[in-house]
Image 1 (tube, rainbow, N blue to C red):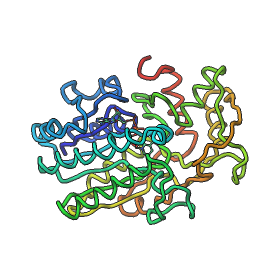
Image 2: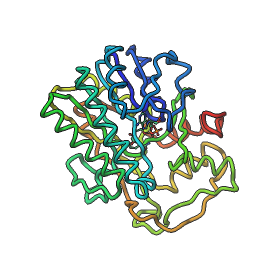
Image 3: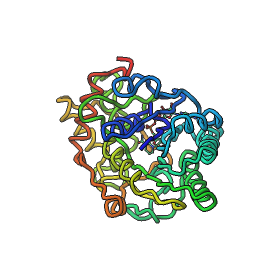
Image 4: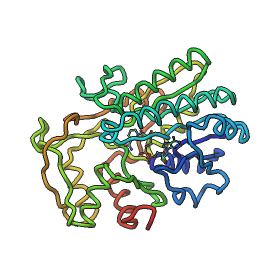
Length: 331
Ligand SMILES: NC(=O)c1ccc[n+]([C@@H]2O[C@H](COP(=O)([O-])OP(=O)(O)OC[C@H]3O[C@@H](n4cnc5c(N)ncnc54)[C@H](O)[C@@H]3O)[C@@H](O)[C@H]2O)c1
């Protein structure tokens, strides 16, 4: 297939672009490089296949789709910092929602009828049932989650009115790096658990902050469902094969097993051979105690099966890249 990956210079998009390429698809990346890294793509994507453009530039995106005869779009491009979304909701609604509507318009004009959309566990808010199934009530507790939920609804409206075929993938905690060490995780600012724990090992003057050790969980720290980024990428390839015109399918992507923050720090300690320096800080408002996915629908309908489900493979792959690239793609 001829596939456009929006946000493909970012963390998850670059891993997905690499897997698409390896499986023989024709790949283009569209990214405005606000948070992306062209260096991530250098080893496998010809330079003229990185289209530096903004989702909001409808005409430019439409031209890119037509000129390259794109058949499907994997849509990763978004802002994704929960805390920032609370203080700058305008930035999130504009980039994520207005940007996605612009992309959908460009796709419609160019006759591209397939999209895989990056959604998130944040659409559920505080869970009432764990593991969380797809039909769990949606009650996002921050603007980031609300923008993702409203985009899911926009896709359903476009499917009904224009015959779009879309697959919504709700990721739980994306983690790890390419198992062969070719790609990594480099967000600025970094807010993700494993990279922050690794940074604390590399620079013990900046200890890891545990936000609350008094949660109703076995060791008092929050429990999260970590899913390897390459397993997420695999789900996108499976989703591409099973797209139905005029329909939106929604799937949770997680391992179905929770790990506490302390268990993750222990795994970073095993990978690095050094304990992670850590302090306990107050709880952050809006953090659910436990977030674990029920991904049985993706397993049954897409035939998806994570290849790297265990915590030591996930953390080991992250340690492998991040310890060699302490300044991310700048090193
Ligand atoms: N990382 C996670 O744990 C996680 C969990 C759930 C959902 N998601 C979703 O997955 C997607 C990818 O996340 P990530 O961690 O790889 O983020 P990332 O910031 O590494 O990648 C996003 C990319 O999109 C680009 N981008 C942003 N706005 C754009 C625009 N208007 N036009 C063109 N390019 C634009 C950025 O430059 C960046 O390269 C996001 O949609 C995010 O909401 C991520």
